[in-house]
Length: 378
Image (cartoon, rainbow, N blue to C red; front, side):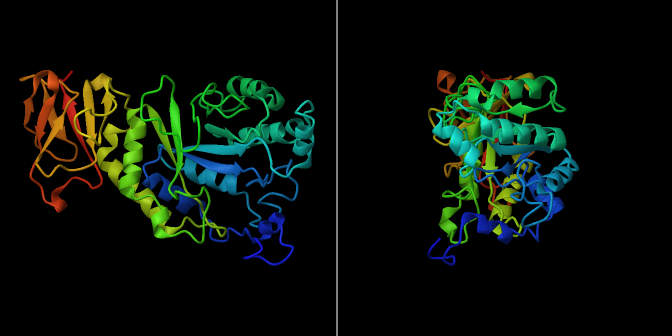
């Protein structure tokens, strides 16, 4: 702050600089749909308390009263809902760093509840009733228990009386000690990627910028995950039963920077080819291969299909899989995006060897990872 801003500059002084003059909700929605995403989660309010809509409970500290003079939540909600197969969600922070009501409750060891009663809960009811998010991503318990936030009372209303009661999904951040224990799906920690199957639905919420959840003017190229790293993260996550939520940090003037847009569109290109190995799949009996590193499995039980997603094309021309057991006459192998069936050799209880087609780079169905569809295997 001292190095880059004038003397006496405070956090509140950032608000007028948040202009969003280039924010185009329809452009954002097009980019997000092109990424292959099935749901979008906008940060409606982070820990500083500034709301991206004109909240009645955040006077003069919201995007309508200060800065953009626009209802950013409403604009994006409308644009996203115009897109096919794209659902709208909202992130909302329970606590606020600077709010005197929260600080007073904290000083009372949360035996008083002025802040949730007067601020957090009214805001939650407001955004659900007004914008009807189908994903509600709670965060920031401020080390206060769920009873302080009256989380069970709000969630009871959300699931039984709210306008999204039949479709809404929530996470696990509703008070101290709730995370990874209670919730529609678990997040457990930021960038959570356990590498093994969980017995509860979960989500890997991570960042394309390895060092930040926001936009950084001083970021260098190596700070951003490559598309190869992002595809690997997606495949690992889905094979272990999780969803992937990729974070991007927009600019103060409302743009999605070019490198974020490129990564999103690249992911969409990969999913356009390999989506059947990701969407609506379930975890298989094995999550990754025990013989060949970098091979991860997903399954469609209703189709009796298993997918082996491999991240490196072998120079040998064949891929050894230690987990599937193939049988002559019943087992079939195809490469998604390639029309001809592939030849294979059974290794009995030790797996199988798949002979890959000899293709040039331009003939490959995609880049950054490939998927085999296996049927008639155990």
